[in-house]
Image (cartoon, rainbow, N blue to C red):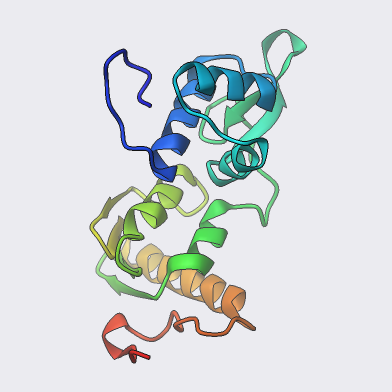
Length: 186
């Protein structure tokens, strides 16, 4: 799935999405059918519905490229303009996985369920709306380096507010303001 002859990659959602990003970044992909064919040529079979969800999850957008051709692009590509407010993938990911946030100097310490830190860090890295210098992700913790203590506090407050707002009305979801150590097992 890596696109290199003879290279092996896990058949996971993350690996497939990474490959989709690579294909979109290296080829002028004008339709989902074309993208499915390119992936199939590499041995990656995916349904149209799954491909559509993958494109949404990685932040792929359709835009007019060189020569007036409409093509897919990844939002972090320099040729892509800002996405409409409210469609920031960080919002979706924070709602899904953020269980706590605490500033520590100019670092925002973000807690997730085990295995979800990379997912949150990736969304933060691809977003240019939060002023993040960089991230480091472990299994259940993301360290988001901010330019100042104030920005670290603001990021924590913003992400907690987004996660809390998005989780209203859900059942069985851990409150993002409760630290992971205080969760009760069912």
